[in-house]
Image 1 (spheres, helix red, strand yellow):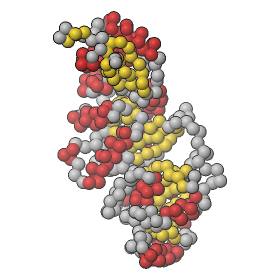
Image 2 (image 1 turned 60 degrees about the horizontal axis):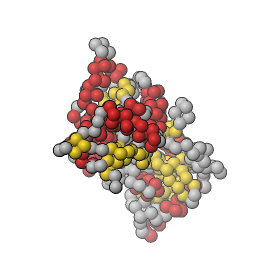
Image 3 (image 1 turned 30 degrees about the vertical axis):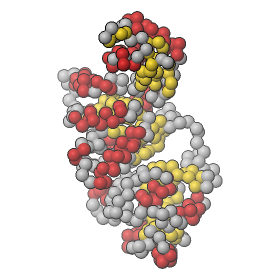
Image 4 (image 1 turned 90 degrees about the vertical axis):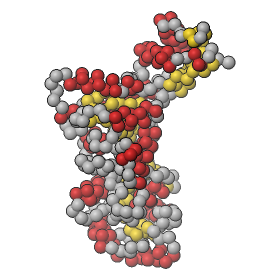
Length: 437
């Protein structure tokens, strides 16, 4: 059975993201003292009294006709539709507002269980003021402090009362976590929506629309569970002005760290620029599996061997990513996106592949026979044996007489021979050179 889903909704700046971060135990949502910081739906797992559930943070619901606010409201509406229980957050400091009443009226039409959380009730006087929220018609209001955590236990006690009797059973199959990374406006959020065939995250031609790293769980056609992470566009350091945007870049880098595989998104229309290389470097340095996605391929004139030319350019500009498969896709038309889950599964298996030491050393001896070890100042490198010590990524220790005699070009030669002998597409390999004691 799927985990029950709890959505946190309310007008802007009542503390939804603060409560979300406290309940999930991590700073996944950006918190700031002004409206409109959270824009997409942010998902994470939380647990209370042994019951696990999915928690959704949403953008503040604003009834204005501003285009971005309309999209934020639409995202909140989808969250409410998905939810089994809704936490309706209000603020004791501002008291009951017209916006609160408008949202309460809307929630009555959802026919979902609603629990009112009166946030910023940090002292007894503010907790007493929570009684005015009875007029919203959603039962007892629960005074809490998202910042300090007071009252959240009582709130969650009420929330879990609405969970199904059987909640939180999973099939035990490990989810593959992958993220979309790239500079701003290359189509990362559009790819998320195209994969899910729904408007999961906000898409805009305005750079910086995505700020949080947005997690989405989905099941592929062959039944494999995935967690897909959309990230904010990573700009040049000199162009990161706002604190909020700085945190967005930090969360994008954090999303890389918690991913098994990173999809580097390039823009087929604008081509490869220097910032693409810097973004790719973050994933490579983190030793993640990598897929190169060339988005907006539908907008390219396919004459004059454009496919081969773009592939050659990628291999030239990203020589250190020679192991990464390239997929030409279109978020707009869905072109070739159906191939991505199977590619991700292959890379995940490659990252967890173990090779027997005896087989490894047969390949090693053949490589040395083909290309003898180098010498330096009359001393020859001697390689004794190799063994695999870890996976994710595959990590190997090569024991030698003197690590300083191992030139990087010879280490690269050994890596290439291993790739020829074993299937490691999509994942970097780590070779650790150690002196035999």
